[in-house]
Image 1 (cartoon, rainbow, N blue to C red):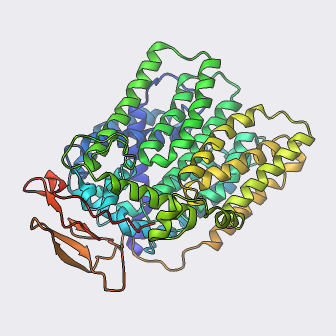
Image 2 (image 1 turned 60 degrees about the vertical axis):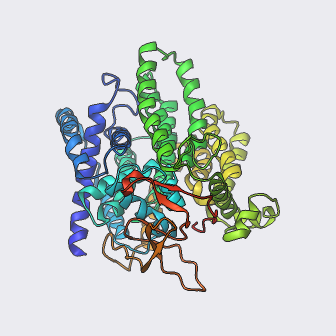
Length: 559
């Protein structure tokens, strides 16, 4: 465990350099160096997108293993070579920023050494990562276990890290790396502000107000490879880059608008719940593209090509694993023998929606998807949810003060539009705060940051100590005192279920009075309540699964 604590920061550094190298090497419009476009951190986030693009194609034919690293190594090396001449441009962050950053690193390392994983991680996150590391995309694997049919490319990322540092150690380090990169970017970009050498702009204030939240983004469990952490951090990243573009004094470049647009598309393929933020941001970015007259045919064609390379393999993988183009929507089924029964998808979607509305399980959750009786209890829950009520009060309070002081808020509207659209999608699809936590905080902190930026400098002297204290309190309050080995995933107590076709499946050993869906680490193929009609399409797992008879449509119980 102590060894892991020393290895972890070096693993994060290696992964950061590697992914950033890929991003720099693949960065389009390379001669453009605008607002966020020339940033080292933009290289990382774009590099992560390029790695996902590559892995989506790779996993159509091969499992995610160490060969992926070897194939990408020349690309990463070339990108690092391009970065090397700029190393002298990296300025010292200053004492306060340096101390704060070191505290954050220690906090994130200790937070990652925790095996009290969230429920969904033990139900299907680790299982998905294990399947990705063992097989290429398997036709109809959603028939084996519904959650394996979910088309979320996020899991390719922890599977990729796990290929370098196995036994789930790399997977459990995945979200810690994302949190560290975001926190480092905030501290590094605002080092001059932290030293008192630069005015606190709207952009700087927004980032610094978000810093305590980014430090604590894995409050449930940082080592759980859940896409929710990625979606929250990407929401902040997109909003911050949009504010940087809005506040830019120099002329914007096409790259400045392309990068947040690319992040939006990346968020959608990583987890479809990002669609609200993505559509809202796309509207604002399109408006900026037109008003700045940056719509040149050559640039647009390159951007469209990159977008297609990212989205098409994602669609194909979804069709392979579930038999539907847009799981869990049943509108676009494929004429394939491995296609999951439509009712199974309907049950799944109803359960997710019902659980988000009521926090109930089983049939009560299913029923809530089709009624409105859940609304009073949901309102009561939201009014007592800190991450909902505080951002809303901040937004309302800032709006009132902006009106009283007659401060123009045109720039602010461009930031709030994507967030309002995102919250509208959230309300309709799955109104649980964890699915849009950072969208709500951005909705509250953006108006607050905009308002504060219009106050005289003399009133802002206490802001930096306030942020430092908030970060310190967040780390002290949530410091992990129960340190456990990284990637310590429990192997399930299983038994064998034999289907009508003779297929043997490992299943969770439930008692007569229990219904445990926790799979954790398992031997493939594994399920919870498999259908007796399940059979393989060929002689091996790689050939896929299908149902010989109509499914029994057992509704999923996981949260």
